[in-house]
Length: 314
Image 1 (tube, rainbow, N blue to C red):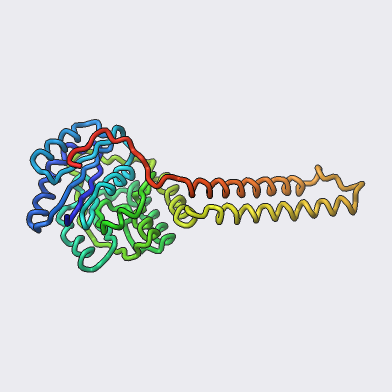
Image 2: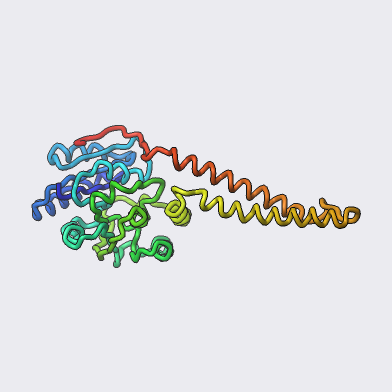
């Protein structure tokens, strides 16, 4: 199979027929063998009924329906597991991503040999302060932390070699940082292409103010997980050692001072006594956190599990 298109969605019943017809037109014009995998992330409208209807008219349409809303990362995770195409695409279901971009993105993967091509919506139709300013901050921060020179990490339109999406695990809200996950999995040939961004035709955006806080926390998480996921003791052990040595040094100083001046030296009246006690406790706690982290990382299951209510075509 040439192409798999993974499309997560939430309450997008109005746009699905038009999007499917557009994709089918592009695929037929380029004679691609393909599949479209819709992941219904707990929609409350008629999205799943629409997907089932589209499946009857086009056997290339497949669907996964979650029993409740798990989030975009969970939807992509299940879509990646099911994808069979040589090149795998992700795109949003709201018609803001253009299927006309697919042939060129595929060419960059197949002919130029890139592992991942990320879309860059250079000209946007949702140019608002609440969207663009946080997005620019997170993109700049992620570029600096990861060393990946992309302008739009969170663009929904991306193309991947199949082995890339089979080698990464998207969880939490890490869909914003899939290029970073891919790089840390060993896929360093990453580039971007300017793509068309279209005005939303149906419905409303599903992302609220929470993405500001979540985006910042995800940056910290992706940095930590990328460096220390398989060796947490290297982080907790280092800081535990530093705090413990500081506490031990202060304790040794206090003991010597008490021995030299046993009458006038009152330990409990000195601030450095409490500082020594605190740093010793913090150091030991960090060590314990490192040991527990090592146990968890070595015994954790390799995959997440999401409760799927129904599938079609898979």
